[in-house]
Image (cartoon, rainbow, N blue to C red):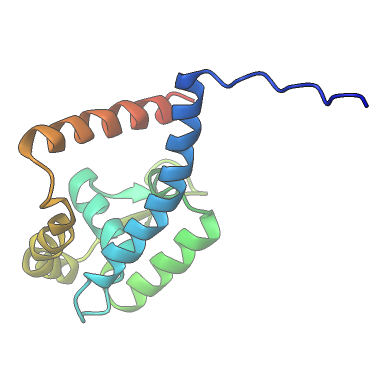
Length: 154
């Protein structure tokens, strides 16, 4: 009876990397659900709030920039911007140099809403990390930053 060829043992570091992939795949959607559950009752989902925060932090930007920063499809960003515009949180304006592009900017209402809700929302979401020590929080932040830089450079 012939024996099946033995597969080579996977090196320890390779096993760890595969476990990391599995863990991130489980964690990311769970974190998204957690963040969504912490939104207030003001009609701002986590994604809508994230767009407003990006626009506040970085200033007006074109849809392509938002799509890249959010890591979602252009169709998804368009739907989010449409709903934010309908609720008077953002306005579309022509790009000063590129006729094909539209610039998305915050309205005064969005600024007021962010002043009231943004910090409270982020504080509610941050309670997930209450079990981490300050050292663990710094380490996690460093690792996430390193991974984000790697993704950004690809």
